[in-house]
Length: 264
Image 1: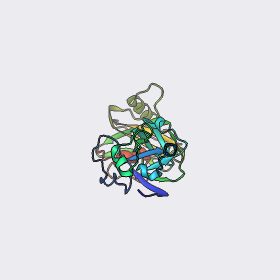
Image 2 (image 1 turned 90 degrees about the vertical axis):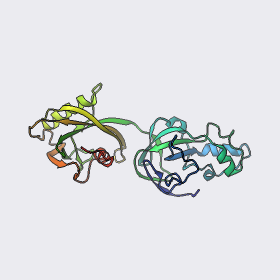
Image 3 (image 1 turned 90 degrees about the horizontal axis):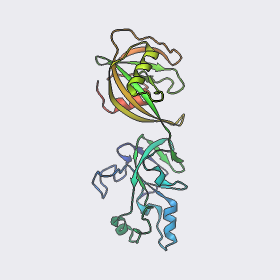
Image 4 (image 1 turned 120 degrees about the vertical axis):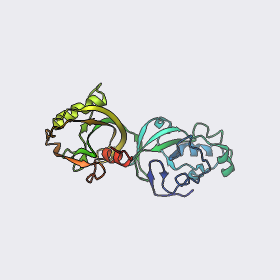
């Protein structure tokens, strides 16, 4: 284990260069998340009260936290600085860790061995980054397909200003993704949606506004009418662009869907 001031992380890999990111860790099964492990400094310090001296790195957890109740983050999306993760389960100490440390830590760390988490966005984690639960907001993106082209426009609203995005927005209370897609498409372009099909989802962080969106993408047909920019304060104009040659920069949820390998 090596102490670092900052590390690069990525979904599906965790800490870049870590033994589990390179698939060379002791445990080879995929039954649990191995992107990221965290442990409380308070749990490590409590071992000293039992006469067991253990440095944070000896726990073989990726991150050591202070002042955070990690158990509260299981099942939650949470911020670590500018990236987001989702707590998945407790990370209880095992006999392998006892063998590596040569110290009797199974009982003292029972229930306090830390947690596991999946990385949801790439970026860097630095010493001193704050950790806290995130409020996830719902969003809907509308893929209006015409052959291999989709309807896309440059955003003028503050959220994602200057990026290219498909029509969409936030669902109203009790509104389904399909109903939201129809309403947003009508309000933004004047087009009427047909043949709704949910084709993907993404979770994206916007550190500049400290918001997290869970976006559901709905693919639709919209007949032969021409789209109009009915909300010019949000989108200057709409264009048909090939899904496989989209303009830059993309709105983060659209970038996530394109990066997932989704094909029209």
